Image (cartoon, rainbow, N blue to C red; front, side):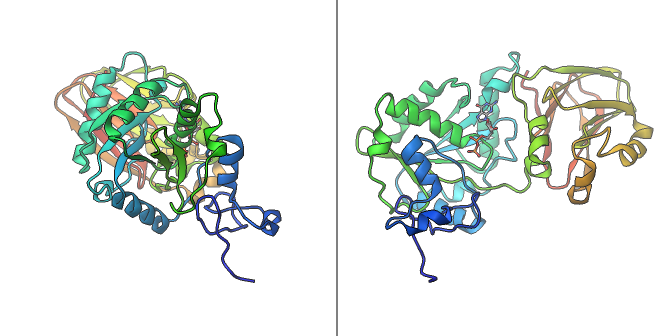
Length: 367
Ligand code: GDP
């Protein structure tokens, strides 16, 4: 029979084909009188949320729903992949609601990075993209850094209203929500005993003391994220796992650095200087002469220059070059999703290469 079955938890249409998509439930569960999707099952029985992938249309529907509702929007971004993790046009969907911008993965920043600078930069970037957050916070969902502070901010800004947590995949939204669940429920199993209303399509509800709730919305895939150009194993290589150890390269003009085979940095013109690379400690950096760089890449991408791997080259986009003339220091050349290179002083011309679709840009140095 082709009648639609609806999850009694979140209201998503049940499907049994793709575990990574919304509404997945194993076939065996369809015999039950009331069917619950795996995502809701996990929340109900393990107090744990899991991210599911959504189509762009589904996501737009959810965003529209959030815009029509009244409440505080908590938008999570990955501070290592700000542009890759931004939801374009988000300001059009917020309705009149306040947005608290939360930058996650602060544990990865080297100690030398000033948190206030990072926050200032996040706010400035958000504004350039059309969003005026009511406040900006930095957290580490994984390490539990500043979670209490963010919960206080949420409490302060929500004005007794509901809270909607949004963010694209990989920003650490599930980790963040799971932290909050722990904080909110404490020793008590509030979630497992709570009623799943089934009216808020695709959203998971975490009840708050005053009858309001925190809603976890599913994440959307941003296809221009560096993360989507590498396989799962390599994602571990390019994603920093612990505090980044800056690597200093003294370069003369006409020298090149390759970051695996994913990105490239040319020092075209200027005095010999120390460039500082803030990238995953595991990502291999290869130095060469600029005049040899093209050939080297062609011959060794997928091997010495990897990720990507040889068998992935067919799907790997070409590297696109962008030139920057830096008049005054200190600046960061940011490779969205990978990290950045600090340019100590002005008076240099450099070029950055990233896979087509990935963003690269200059900002004032965070150090
Ligand atoms: P989601 O897709 O947004 O729900 O993201 P996840 O919660 O599944 O996290 C994506 C990846 O980021 C996982 O590998 C997490 O371990 C990692 N992650 C999440 N939060 C943090 C954090 O605060 N610091 C670091 N270093 N990694 C994090």
